[in-house]
Image (cartoon, rainbow over all chains, first blue to last red; front, side, top):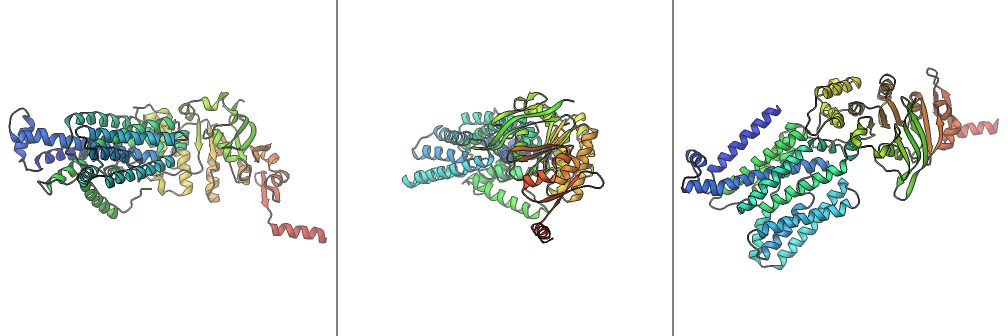
Length: 327
Length: 273
């Protein structure tokens, strides 16, 4: 059952990759796609589209999807809350503020993602100092995150109310999440941070299992919970920060993918984390392909697609399941 | 026989408030100790100190002669297991997966559960009689089954010392006896030392070899059930009137409660007669 699940996920990943190579602003037939894929050094428009535009974008979708979904798993487990997600602790709020500032100030190039990442680091630091100065309690973390998110979103709205409309629109598009505008150098950074972070999660899989029983029980069973929680929080925040900096705020991936896959893997995080990473990669890349196909040549923000698609999918699943215990 | 646990001059509490005001006692290896006392007497605080949830303000706890708080948790968890009063499990989890978590202190980071670990899990499930439940979800079990599942997790740690916080609260009498019989069996056959915090004076008196009666953060009385559960001590600590009889089968003390009305009638008789 568990082997079958991973096999299905890997096949889906492959299918998503090929499907996403073929569809987009223009449709490339399967044969041409394959030719271009296996002979990357020949000239031709199709090759340029496949190698310069679509592959980086699909890879980015895979990475960010995997990162957000696995962070969702870790936050849900660590905070013992099935409604937790990568943005629960305010990381996205800080990133949004940073990016908005960058956009309305007219900074270009690497500045917007850099500002977004700085913003998320800033919110991590705030949470850390507020909560960790006393004790690293779950309720404190969640409450701190919610309060920070409120402050940041109010500041973003404050900025919107002060600047001209065109600039606001750019920022709003960024906030909705978008995989299109990434510089290749940044892709390399993401391609390092996210897989490395997921590897760290995997190494701590058993510890996360224990943390779902609460810190006290985890301590009874021999875990020094405090240190492990700090490491996990930091790594998850870095992944989320990097993902948000690269693509803006893409909602829902980090919430529903973990839920959906937990039904098949059970609570064992050494299975759930890689399953969620694969599932998140498939989900985001497919959503992005839809986003750039449905109203081609225009593109929809991928965050809108993940929200609508994921929401409906999840809702049908929820209604059809005989029993759905999230608690 | 050596002491497995020694508590010396323990002062602890929350914030400014000192709940425990200097507590000292020793627990012999292989014994079955009950800690009793009214609400607010410091039972739970004491339990939380021994299980290292709270740090003592003053005084120290020694496990096998070593300062408890200096022992790495992982190392300690191979010898000391805890049965908490309440445990919420936010995600669906099968009984077997749950019990397997008790092997955590034995497993390396990249190691998978070995055969020996799975055998130990199996043994713990047999001992607690939950083998038929192994595929079930912990969240769908009833109170008695759930408590046995958590006990199985604790036993998978292969403990020498078992610490229990009100193991029978919210259970019907059938399940209460089931759990305590099991604890007695573990104590006698597996030589596991048991320390149990309890609200139930009669159960504690029936099963524990020794009792510690707490009052307002100090030890009011300690000794055998017959010594501790006398009506003089119980009335002084709980501020209510009781009768103490002996259980006709076991000969252990048995506390009978007296309502206010009965008390008034008795008083009336005495005055009238």
